[in-house]
Image (cartoon, rainbow, N blue to C red):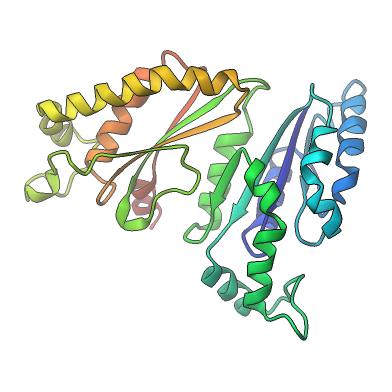
Length: 291
């Protein structure tokens, strides 16, 4: 059985995530009281022997919950049967984005009142959910993310991961557009030769043979890739031994078009022979393709 706990601040996209998981075949429960989580998990696990309808369950737990129960979430979580594949996904966005989303929808924040403003409620909510955020297997920052991007990330990371296996995501990004919040390891490759300054190479990206040939000849590029591979070869097995479900390796250059894409591809080619579940994503290239 697979159990997903969806949490995060109001306006971060939890409802959208829950709807997506329902489309992926999950039995979904919105705003489940945290204290009922172990009982739901156990009941769903028992039902799995009779039907497949509850073999995948997703529940939303957020600030609408009893606040005393939220403070006890780590203890409640420990009471979930150990043989149930359980993961926590935490969604968040920056304060200004959350304020804007509430202003556009004219919804009332669950913590706001006559004496608590919207901005104060958003800040209070972060503290209220901090214990869940600290336990999250995946943190998804949705401030600059479209509905389709969120759906793609959830589908890629969640839908087909077998129980007990660690899923590895290698992604390239551009520092101009912020470091991905879900990163476990971040490697900065901005010190490498930049094809951008060659006007003939500027229109291409790290997937194109022109950039592959250019960066493939650079000794520093090869040394950087070898160094990252050596580091990850030592430490990825250590993470896997701790029953970690998801690990994200982020490779960043200035614009996320050339160097980071090339290096991320090289890492993917190396580790795809060692990892059962491995994915590659080029964040900035995806944005251009969907623009």
